[in-house]
Length: 515
Image 1 (tube, rainbow, N blue to C red):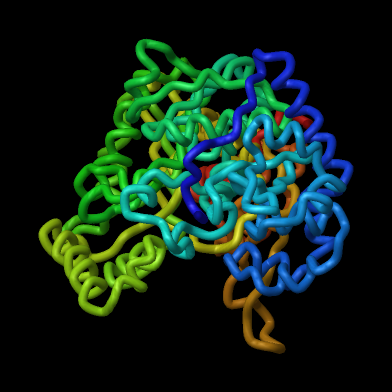
Image 2: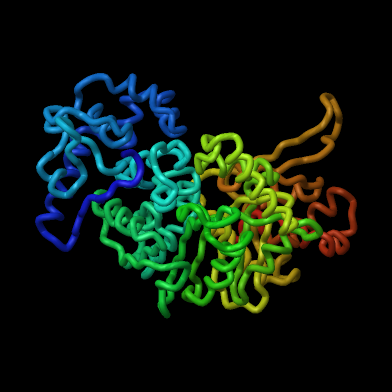
């Protein structure tokens, strides 16, 4: 049956024989080029992209041959049974049967789990394990699985997973916590730069599958703990906390992997508010979240109220959906669109009833990053940025909080005495009518990181253009004042706010004198 297997494979890193079998399986996957690059080369870009949309026909057409790679795609990604001779040519079949990666299906062999190739940030070849049919897309495409089994499904890699992996700070740390590990992808990333990784989940199947992901990818085993929210952490603290939690705002808790079981956006709020108690000084908590837009309330104020004392925060809203779009998205995800017109309408109605009762007009989706600064004057940035960004963003996240520290410690007098340079990748655009003597306005645009753009006046454009670290800001302003015929004292008085904005958004970088 596609979906939840009765038995999951085993991969015990503490058992030398099991460890050796897993190593032989990993070697076979590599030898067959069952990797992200190998898949792209075999399938071609259109079929590869279609597979990510849970459309399998192009991939089936591309795997009609007998090569080991085609066999592995059919087994692990397309869930097609294969003849033993084909499996023997691609895999150590005895090992796979012993550990449960393959099972007998009449005269053929089939996979017990999805195994999806995944490219690590430094070119590593990894594999993400998930329940059958869940390696790509959501659980909505899975048929023949009962409601109870569907609730315990463990999904593979999706857009949310890769987004969180991309924004996470990748500095060496002692201890990292992956809260709600699912298939283990965040724990796998964290294992590359954390001495010790703890991975938790309410679903015991997820912990077993996360262990498989880590073992098959050759990573160190994580400390796996069952439980909800921070309960499994006990009294431990961490340098990094990451979470792709069950953030969907839904009526009820039908599906463990997406529905948190708390009302409205309470689960995400609780995670944010409790995180400070589990962070070491200077530590980061990074998670994805959904939040309500409530009638009569500014969504930015709602999120600011979540941030615990002693923490700086950077909250970015990437998307907003009205309540009908949101309900339809997650009804499809659960497969409710195939439940029949009457059942679908009843469930749709239940979602709208829930939103109406809470005064919810729309749902926001985005990223929340906290840093435990210990400052009484917390820096909380809440913004909407739906535009394309450059992933990975981990270093941009670090730079954002470094800039907050600098601005918090620098008064206007010190700002004017400081030296700045224009950040790499910033260009200037002049916008105006063709042939006009002067532009209507000037735009500074970043080609890196968040790829921001901001309008500046003539003074701002001139200031940014000559910032190369050699002169203090005040001296530059004095020179500009002389050029434009403005009182330098007045210009010095009104410009620090603009300089702060350009520093805060990463257009200007403070440097040591002459740097």
